[in-house]
Length: 399
Length: 80
Image (cartoon, rainbow over all chains, first blue to last red):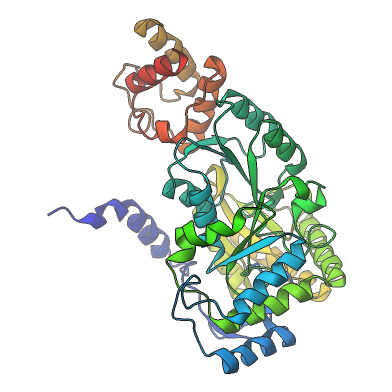
């Protein structure tokens, strides 16, 4: 008998080798208590959270929690069914209304996660004979959406406008085309040149989908994302987003002005064949989305945090993913996986949690310590974070 | 219709700059096994081939191309 698990042997060996150095497993952290959007207890130690994507700190917002509690009482714990059967409650319709208000768009469709939103929309709208043109550094959910559908997949070099244009030119003029882009790329925290890319895509008759998971709530005048910031949101056909970052809950969505959009509720399998989110999550999300519409003070503080951390880390001698801070993600490039894991552990012992990201999730085989800032991080916490990075970096010998 | 050996020579020329191990190239040479290319190298090489012949090699096609001979066939078909 062939052991179906033998294909995982290289990864099992790599993990064993890493853990044999005595380093704490970076992929099995437990938060024993969460005190606020920015502080938790991990291994009995008070830890500053700098890797949670909780950009706007909505997880502990009083109104968001109260709305969820009320929905628990009014609608029960779960839906036990699909959105198209028994799983659409009043809060599901309300959160879709909140999204239409937030983005000023005609249609909104809520999925159980952001992953499923990409999976569902991409695999459903691009079919056999159609082309999907995507950035090579796209998120796994975008690639999985491509794999699940029947379209032809064409990748272009990360953020390379010319590479996108060349490929669009070579495709059959009459074929259906979907260009898939992201506002902020989550590994390096860099922003896409959407204005140019959307224009070129439209010139070549393509529809455009932009994943704005990492920009919602704080990029663009109304927090609608990078497409809004760059003034091209009206030419974007589909925006994908998530509730598990700035909104502070869980769930995914797609908003669009396409006149036939609503038919997707019947043909999109990751929407139809899964249970709808609990009503408490929907009520919390609706409240959070509406509160994010008036969050400009928090936005300004988040940007200030991002700039301070970026400059501070660079001055300490760390190598960063971008020359300037472009989002609330700052990627610190590690020399290799082993020292990355050592640095991650040293930071954890200092009481600081960041994400350790490694191949295949990262571009160019890099190991990254990914920091995501929160509007609720105080200026003192950011200074504290820099001090911890300095001590850990010197202890591990990276700076 | 491009001659097969002519196409092989042209592709060999494009492969050489990426052939860091100096592997002797034949139609049976595999990209992952013999040349040990990672996904990044594959992307750069595919872009080079696409630009040279003004074609698009989709990821669906790339999944079927494991060795140089299969690439020769694919490019001949795409430029036909």
